[in-house]
Image 1 (cartoon, rainbow, N blue to C red):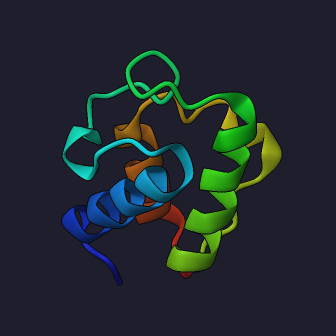
Image 2 (image 1 turned 180 degrees about the vertical axis):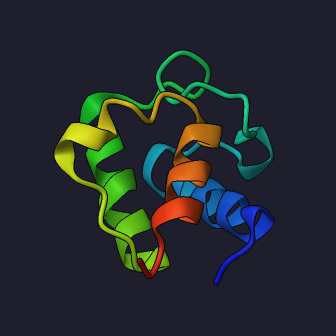
Length: 82
């Protein structure tokens, strides 16, 4: 089971690969759209990559609730390997 720190690190790498955002900018309190300029298409790519990396299923209706990096980390923590 991944720790919060490991999930944050993994998400930072994913966001960096997909959106070109420096990994150090991906913090728990950052909004994907407002702070990190991740558009809806890139967000889908981030979700798919996170699902693969963390062995978690993120339903489409949950994605809209993942506004910040912290929301995504918490969701993965709560649902990974469930």
